[in-house]
Image 1 (cartoon, one colour):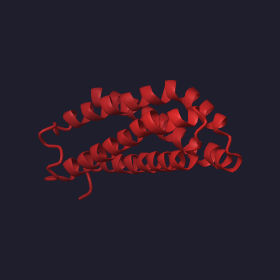
Image 2 (cartoon, rainbow, N blue to C red):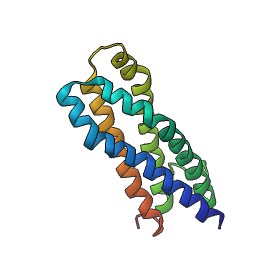
Image 3 (tube, helix red, strand yellow):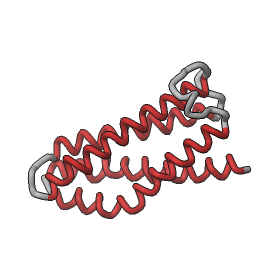
Image 4 (tube, helix red, strand yellow):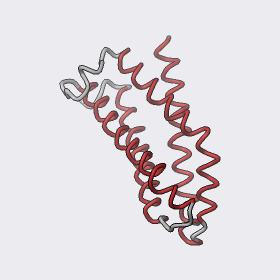
Length: 150
């Protein structure tokens, strides 16, 4: 039962994280790029962050917890010796890449945008990559239901 509750929290958190980024990517970003209206992007970022960042934190916590529940602990990560380990390891790699993009956006790109320095194209790349990584993580997670890739 605990695993099922963790999965529900994980899925709700993933819906928030990926859904928010898909909305940003498909709805907000095209208009921002066309109008060069940085404020619209910053407004979305400010309104989404209080929901999105806790969702990401819950994703990490529940993901690690469920991995341990599957019997796959840190010593098994990146061994790629079973289909479950492979999926979990790939998810961790994609998560780390996502975190790098998030850190880059928060420490490099957004501060410049807030100061009026045009970094919209760079931000668009960050948004696109985080959105695609979220989709890939979602797809990879679906393989766990069936025991991995094999």
